[in-house]
Image 1 (cartoon, rainbow, N blue to C red):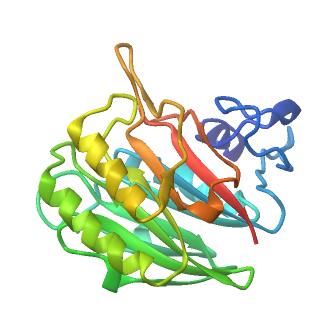
Image 2 (tube, helix red, strand yellow):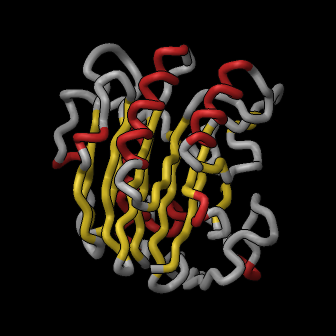
Amino acid sequence: MCPVCVLGSLPFPDLDNGVLEGTSAHVFPQLVSSITTADQNFSFIPGSLSYAHLNVQSLAPKLEEIQIFLQKASGHVILGLSETWLGDLFSDLAVSVASYISYRRDRPHGRGGGLLVYVTETLCSRRRYDLEPQSIEAIWVEVWAGGSQTLLCNLYNPPSTNVEFLEELGYMLEVAVGEKKEIIITGDFNCDVNSPSSMTNQLLSIMSKYQLTQTITESIRVTANSQTIIDHCYVTSSMVSVPFGVRSSAGSDHYMIYITLQS
């Protein structure tokens, strides 16, 4: 498949006429696009740090598309993937992308799960293993940009959400928030904020306790019978006004969520 065809099917914003399909009108008001008919390149806000998350539901058949997108993307881009479904058959080299550092965490036992975060080499970053409990599928990355430090968390919580997960989440956040840095947490929580429940209320209560706000208000997973917000983006209170949104995706029944910071 040619690069133009591949990029046309990727889950990133369609910026024709300056309008972001699938998002509110206020999202990315200053976004500058370099998409052209010839090469379909994509640009975030110049000089910005842009962080996106997608539940990819098996990376292997979509790996080439992801690699081509990241190689063509401009700006300081970070892409977090959940449900990568990788294992020992896939080496780190096999899933690498030129000019990006990859941070990977596979599920050690059983099928499914798995996380991968790509961080452009234009940013200084490091993996924060000390913030990653064994009981939660999460990758923490610290990024330096614009003279400040930001902690990014890419998380996947299986559908069997339970009280133990929420307890461990609280412990994890207490340590991270204690560092007094900006925090962005994205991922598939399998907890629908469109449908209040005891588990959802407890999750939002924990996030609120640590002054983390859920910014995604549009449906992330849409089927013939349901529309749910199970992929979340939590940010520290000082970041609530930054551009964020969702975008429909090809090859996954989840939409992509993203947030852009001026660096």
